[in-house]
Length: 85
Image 1 (tube, helix red, strand yellow):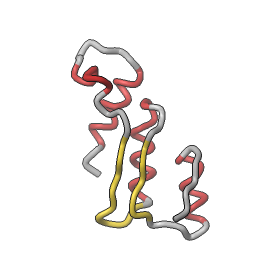
Image 2 (cartoon, one colour):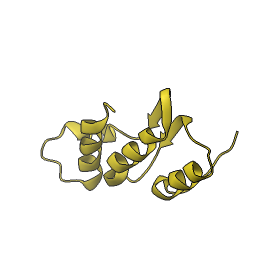
Image 3 (cartoon, one colour):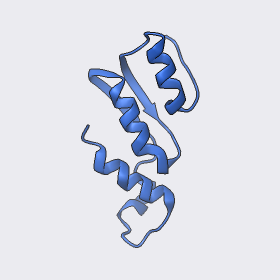
Image 4 (spheres, one colour):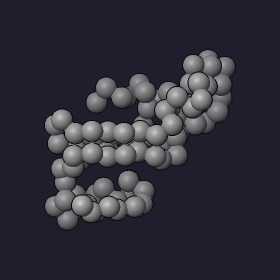
């Protein structure tokens, strides 16, 4: 197993250039405003049937608070709209 740490936006293109993709699983624990972009980048590097795990998607229930202007909550709402990749 090979574990790489770093921003997926930078790391995934490097790994793909090394011939390391497609992947079986990705774990997204990015800053929440960027989660949607991370999902798109990550999903493009997966093989069919792969697993995507995303941390902190419900934001302690704040995701359903329609008045929330928190950037992390807004990021998870955008992420959720794309979650059917």
